[in-house]
Picture 1: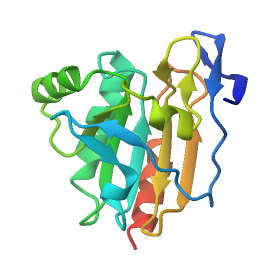
Picture 2: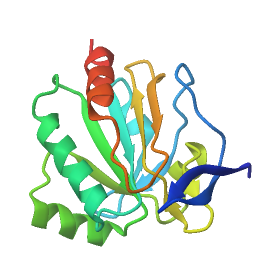
Picture 3: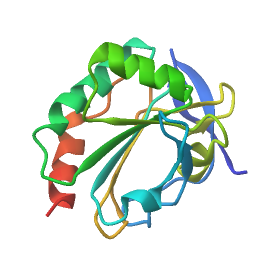
Picture 4: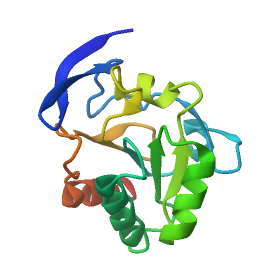
Length: 172
């Protein structure tokens, strides 16, 4: 597995990402994750739908909570059929509990805890922590990446306006 050291930090300390870097124009790699009902989910389950794939370290952290709540609020304003998926290493039970407590009803939370398939295929698996880096990937209806953002510091939020603009364009 390809190692990419120093691309992100946690509190200023460099971390290593596992997997290849993805770029705008690449075909979105497939992955297998687990939904809150313990069922497998893959990219193919969303074929033909514009997607924002949000990669976060853990929903139970302040920045991840803010990000997911913000995208949940924004999801109501998006075109029909646009989906926002938040993927973390949190267990499905914890994700379900967290979503219920926070009123998250538009964003779909998915767990990569079993195989780290998403983390490896999207190059956001943190070697030292076995968590996912904070990143956003927008996939258009044809399965191509139209926006890629790797947030350099884990404690920082993504560029919301850029993500929402890319989602709006992907929905056309």
